[in-house]
Length: 211
Image 1 (cartoon, rainbow, N blue to C red):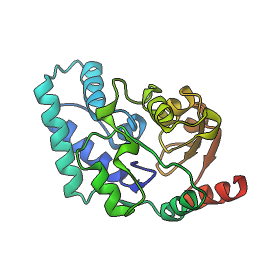
Image 2 (image 1 turned 120 degrees about the vertical axis):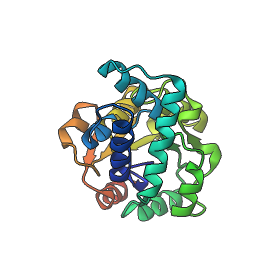
Image 3 (image 1 turned 60 degrees about the vertical axis):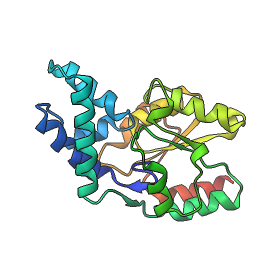
């Protein structure tokens, strides 16, 4: 979702940095991109453990809620340039379109409906609320694969985050990385991406050539 469907990651990064700092945790904007794909609560608990700063469940939830408020105040996300054309191609060619996100906000579907009216379905979304282990664990992508009813060789993951690539690759699915953030392409190759592209226009060209 974020960084693929929505151009939102820079606002997420600013919001995470502000909320973590307010709660006494070190977390840079670059850290946000490195940890992208994990559920928000997993990011908080991991950061707390690594820095030796105890945090209760109530405090973690308050931090996450604060981060969400910051994100919305910054303007949230807008449609990723070139993604509408990609989605149109997928619809014309009768692909099932699933969303597999580490996000846990309650309005995720509404965000997508505003950006791409009529494209997505609630029942084809795997969010933080649907999994025990978020990315980089393969569970989110395995759940989507199992629910879609297709063979693995007929499924494709489109990711922008190294940990998301690791999850897709770990699920045994063909994983395409589109590097819409500031990290190096090599991080995506290293996590198992079979294709690394620069933007959504390049993804559309790849799809047109492949299908």
